[in-house]
Length: 222
Image (cartoon, rainbow, N blue to C red):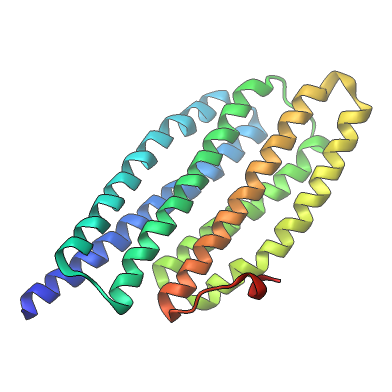
């Protein structure tokens, strides 16, 4: 029995490592997608898009591993939270990867680089999204509730930057007809980045649940 328990704990740890590895890959994808955007690098954008297939394979592997653990042990308490968090966090990671793909795909359509005045707000938003996603995954890997809560607080900063970005780019759309299509694409990218921040917050809240068994209710998010 003791040996079986040790093996089970080891298998739980492997699931957590798989989730962490998937998260690291998604975070790298967002960072590279932003680099592709700022440099107008369509080849790098293509590499980000291709890497999304790996994330799809990773989440299937994680889901299969979680289902197998449930079937083998009928887990309760903390063990069950580990599995539930693995399911949920991997889903948010996949969404982050999807948005990195979306950004990269848009880069291939932008063509001519826009000047820094048009890019600076999206660049700030991207830096915030990358920071939030990376910290959320570090909180998961290190079981750090304090860091997870910091990610939740960063969401206010993200919302403020997004609001300013959306306003600034919308102004450009109305005043500069020759660049309307490209600026509109930047608006889409801004939305993708804002959603990445939302998924980072979801991950952080699952970390808090995993470590404390406390769920974050809507009233707690106000």
